[in-house]
Image (cartoon, rainbow, N blue to C red; front, side):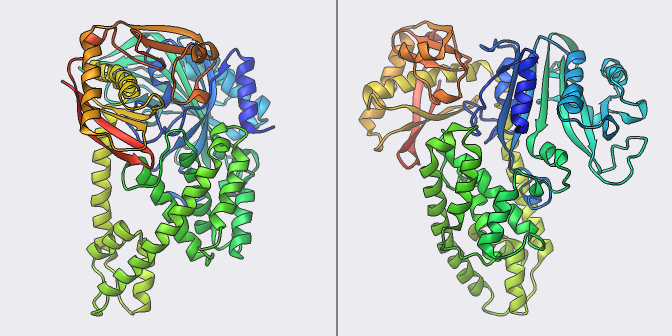
Length: 580
């Protein structure tokens, strides 16, 4: 049986309800471009909102992380990965969470106890040593020499303030070397496979920490890493998750995996991530901003490595690989079935575009090196940033001409670029769901009014395709086949303000998903919602499935003003608006 099925079945047997995986592109959460962890879509519920499925939840969640893109090509990093998780929302706590983790590892996955080690929170000036977790592991048969006490790696907090607490991490001895009696956290042969986070405290803005009356458990286990461990391989790409994909790349390229590992891993990883982003209901397409930029980078990087393997780029190589990935995952994620043609078409379109860019880049390289001068760092970075040339390609081309590349200067420019990106990401993080402010709550409600107004003024078949909310503004994507006229924009704005002035009540109720849809409630991605859903109704003008939060009455919103209306993607328009 597949690891995902084993995990879900186990926690369902412990009274958990399976919840559907959220999309890879988060809704109404500007903190990140993608869902980066299993717990991210559950933040509102971990913050106290009632979950329609109750207090014990479990799932497998699609995640995308691109902060360590340069590490892809090693044995264990992935941009897309699946996280297994189980949660307690004010229900069970440390004893049960640790006991079930141990039971699943040793009884269901049959991992020998002697190959396991754990860490627990050592304590600091404010929060004491996690004696409960330590004692629990001892009682389950983990030797005290295999329990390491650490501070930095065993404490979790989402941001500067809010829910926080100790965690306990489980490690597996991933080596054929003799297993040492004592657990050394610095020894890389010990690989982390699971993490149980105990949200026990709340950190206040003044730095003080208080005990939470309602404590939560959040756990996470990576599917790729655990599968490799269970199958006894030290290279994730040699596991059953990747084996057929790598074999297909070998066949297409006519080359062996051995000696070409990096390029083959990058092609496999990046195309899998691209397939999931393209299939996501948010309708992301390759572009030069936000998620679209990441998507474009992934596809183009895969193409560069296919070229380095001497794959004929004009053949349908990317379609062959995408099809095997779609077939492998569509049993778990229905959007892969629904958007199969979209995925294949967009991959092909981007390949064709990049081939032209690649040619332009080669011409630019020829222009830069015409005078026989070595390539400075700024030029090398320009070739990377504008034409997608990796440093190794520029170095290779330069060597053929007997020229040198200022690699140090390139690295400095690259670090400067990364720092700018980090600063931008940090700015994005401040507005996350974990910090839903009063202003953001008002914007959430305003998106519902805007959606309703667009249906009245422009077209009844308009639907939301995505949104992004911060303290400063709202961004709303919707399907539309034309640029809105000034008159349409004014009418939409006036109608939203009319509804605000009417002081309409915003009511909330929980009901069966099918009943909600039958009652006329609108939702963006019906398949991602659980059987019991939350429905927000605004007067008699709007009824939507939504996770919230919302104001109690539209009179709380202030004055609505559209600042900009523009194209977002093919057939998708975007409105940026503010509440004043």
